Structure formats: structure tokens, C-alpha cells
Amino acid sequence: MSVTRVQHFAVSLDGFATGEGQTREAPFGHAGERLHEWMFTTRWGRTAQGLPGGTGGADDAFLRLFTPGVGAEIMGAGKFGHPGWQDDPEWRGPWGPNPPFHTPVFVLTHHTRPPLAMEGGTTYHFLDATPAEALATARGAAGGLDVRIGGGPTVVRDFVRAGLVDHLHVVVVPIVLGRGVRLWDGLEGLEHDYDVESVATPSGVTHVTFARRDAEV
Amino acid sequence: MSVTRVQHFAVSLDGFATGEGQTREAPFGHAGERLHEWMFTTRWGRTAQGLPGGTGGADDAFLRLFTPGVGAEIMGAGKFGHPGWQDDPEWRGPWGPNPPFHTPVFVLTHHTRPPLAMEGGTTYHFLDATPAEALATARGAAGGLDVRIGGGPTVVRDFVRAGLVDHLHVVVVPIVLGRGVRLWDGLEGLEHDYDVESVATPSGVTHVTFARRDAEV
Ligand SMILES: NC(=O)c1ccc[n+]([C@@H]2O[C@H](COP(=O)([O-])OP(=O)(O)OC[C@H]3O[C@@H](n4cnc5c(N)ncnc54)[C@H](OP(=O)(O)O)[C@@H]3O)[C@@H](O)[C@H]2O)c1
Ligand SMILES: NC(=O)c1ccc[n+]([C@@H]2O[C@H](COP(=O)([O-])OP(=O)(O)OC[C@H]3O[C@@H](n4cnc5c(N)ncnc54)[C@H](OP(=O)(O)O)[C@@H]3O)[C@@H](O)[C@H]2O)c1
Image (cartoon, rainbow over all chains, first blue to last red; front, side, top):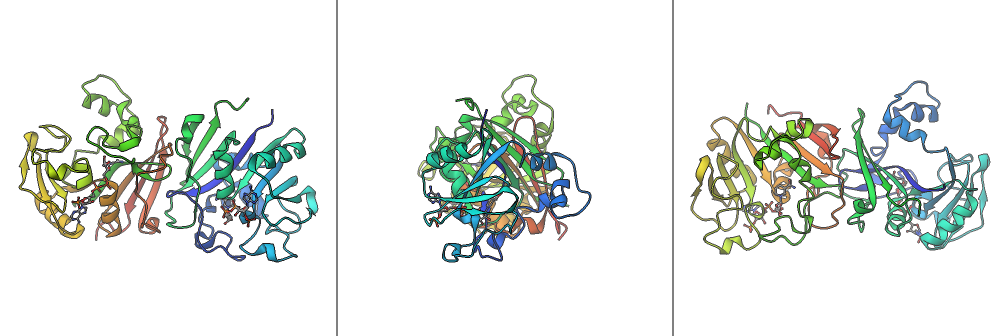
């Protein structure tokens, strides 16, 4: 059965999933790398950097769920690039020639362009569509596998609010960012539709997982 | 050594410490009891309700820190009563004739009145003062013991921002309240001054503790 999942989506204690002042050099604005430092010390994170070693606990386990069983990703224009990328015809995303997705990726944007085939199986498709339409398109391309909703916060929020997310995995990082884009806005009462679990790990973060009760439907 | 502490201060995932629409009957507004349900199943919480049994894990351990070593509490007008209590000369707080503090309690308010001596050692003093002044007054009354900053969120935030809180214990409850009064506003970068730890418990909440690095000063 194919589900829709949000994976290791990092937010601060005050609910910000990115900082203020995003630029090409600082994709998370003033947040820098503080929302993602917990990843770098895991075995998964170190392998991605070409380094040996790393932790093998729950942080690592959650990160290892990133790839298996996922057949497509949907992301927002704000994740695909810094403000203004739409005016740069050469922009091919921030992940280089061989992005880590290795599946079709649907970029939601009001400024569509032709598909971009990258190395390693990633193809970027640019889509101006409602969340439900985008999900139907991504499902069609996912070959029966799961669809990842990759962020940023605006897109995750829209999909959760539309009732389209089966598994929501949020990582609460114990910092107070103060400004940026919030995840939780407009999601009052979210917990009613999900089974919720929390686990804190030695890195200091807390994994909060929401599994939709009627995920079969 | 006397420290200033905030104890088991409950917030939702989106950072609200109370809901919208506070009344005498609903002191947490639309949040109801959802921020505090985790307490009711502990041994400490059940004893307070005159019931036997209850859990004895980390939730209970944290709650048991409420009384020992505390010589005074500071609270805000919004914790002392529903909006409008200031116009009710008979109002003696929501905790009945024998409140659970058993120490002097300093109620910060722009509508001061004479002190109120209650049963069991609690005396309410009404104070219009800055956080630093209020803390000096409470310290003077605490007999060398700690001062608890009891809330609500506005008062906790003001004291933390003024650098007056040594130990901050926040309980993140995995619900999305959507509206109310936020704790974290204006506290950007808080983590820099504190050692932070997180532990999730079987009740589903996460205890996040901030211990000030220079708490001796
Ligand atoms: N914390 C994490 O784990 C995490 C994960 C991923 C990303 N991020 C960060 O999140 C930030 C981006 O998030 P964000 O909330 O600002 O933006 P976003 O969610 O990535 O994208 C929102 C934008 O996508 C376009 N869009 C969204 N829905 C659409 C629809 N239905 N139809 C057409 N276009 C649509 C719109 O852009 P246009 O109108 O311009 O086309 C909209 O402004 C970046 O800083 C990124 O680094 C964080
Ligand atoms: N989540 C938790 O664990 C927790 C704990 C405790 C309380 N609560 C809840 O929090 C809510 C109350 O919080 P709140 O943020 O609305 O209010 P609050 O922090 O209790 O009180 C703020 C009010 O106190 C007065 N005040 C504050 N600082 C002052 C100063 N320096 N000098 C003079 N007066 C001052 C002002 O009232 P006036 O101008 O009217 O005098 C101000 O509006 C209630 O719903 C309560 O049930 C939650």
C-alpha cells in the first residue's frame, strides 16, 4: 500500500522549519545549519559526506527511512531554490548534478518550466497544481511506491491541512529560532487524526511521529 | 545557593502555554486540560486528587520537584485569575482556601491590593514592579530558598528575557493548539546561555530542561 510521508522534517522549539533571510548561500537563512546538525553525526549523515563512522541509534534509523520504498517526491519552490531562482534559467536546484532523490521530483511552482533530467534517476517536473492534483500526479509516477512530501514548511502545512499526509515525522530541535517560516500554523487539533509518539535521543532532538489512524482510506 | 526556577511549564508543539478564551470556568481557554493531562496519571497528580496509585517515572519525578527547596513564587495576574478578577474584591485566586504553594506568592499586577493570608502558609502579595525588583522582593521573602517563577507565559517570558531564570523546565505536549499565548516569542537564541536536555516519557510528553551555564553568578 502506498502512503504519503513527511520525513525527518526539522523544526525549532518555537516551530520554525527555516530561518529568515534565505539566500543562495544560506538556504536556511539565519538558522544556518542548526536545524540539521543532529544529522551530521549519524552514520547516515557521515556516509553522505564521505566520512567513516557515526552514530547508529534512533536518529540514524529514522534517516535511513529516507530512500527505501519512496517512488516520488513533491517539494515547494522555496525548497528547490533561493528566492529568485525562477529568474535564473540555468538554475538546476541546490543539490548538484546527481541529486539525492533518484526518483521523479515534482516542484510546486507558479513559474513552471520544462522537466529537467538529472543524473542518477532524478527528474525535476515543475507543476502548478493543487496539493490533491500534485499528489495524484506523483502517485502516477511513483510506480506503486510511497510519495514523500519533502517540504518546505509551506508545502508540508498545505498537504497536512488537506488531509493528504499519512505519516508525518517531525524532529524538534531544542533551539529557539525566533523568526522564519512556521510549520504548525493552521494545523490546530492535528493530533486528533493521528497516533502520536515522541522519542528523545542523545543528540538532544525529539522525534515526534504522527501516523494517520485511517491511513488505509 | 538560591536559584530561580520555572517548573513543569507545559506548552503545545506550536508553543502555546494556554489557549484562547480564558474564563473563570476555563482557565486555559479552548486548551481545556489538554496541556496537563500527563500530570493526572502520575502518583503525584493522583495524590493531589486524593486518589491512590499512579506512575512513578520521570513525569512524576519532575513534578515532585515542585515543593522542596522553594521559598516563594512569583506569578502573573493572568495566572492568578480569569480576565476581570481585578474588579472582584472577593477574588482569592482559583486554588481555594488552602492553595498548594505554602509560601509567600507575589502576584505581578498593575491593580495592586492588600496582601491576602490564606491557610497553609500561602500569602498573596500584589506587586507592581519590574521583574528584577519582584525577584529581589521574592528572594528577600524566600529565606534563602529558591524562587519559583510560576507563569503564565507572559511572566515566564519576561523573566527569561531579563536573564533572571536559572532553571527552565518546559514540558512539550504533542498537541497543536493553534491559538492562545505563546511561550517562546522574543526568546531567540535562548539555548546559547543554557545546557539543554530533552527526555520523552511514555505519557507522550517531552521534558526539555534548560540549566543556565553561569547559574552561580
Ligand atoms: N526543516 C526542514 O526539515 C526543511 C525541509 C525542507 C526545506 N526546508 C527549508 O524550507 C524553506 C522553504 O520553505 P517555504 O515554506 O519557504 O517554501 P516551500 O514550501 O518550499 O515552497 C512554497 C512555494 O512553492 C510554491 N507553491 C506551493 N504550493 C503551490 C501550488 N499548489 N501551486 C503552485 N505553486 C505552489 C509557491 O512558490 P511560487 O509562487 O514562487 O511558485 C510557494 O511560495 C527553505 O529554507 C528550505 O531550506 C526545511
Ligand atoms: N502552561 C502552563 O504550565 C501554565 C502555567 C501557569 C499558568 N498558565 C496559564 O497561563 C495563562 C496566564 O498567562 P498570561 O501570559 O496570559 O498571563 P500572566 O503571565 O499570568 O500574567 C500577565 C499579566 O500580569 C501582569 N503583569 C505582568 N508583569 C507585570 C509587571 N512587571 N508589573 C505589573 N503587572 C505585571 C499584567 O496584568 P495586569 O496589567 O492586568 O495587571 C500582565 O498582563 C492562564 O491561562 C493560566 O492558566 C499555564
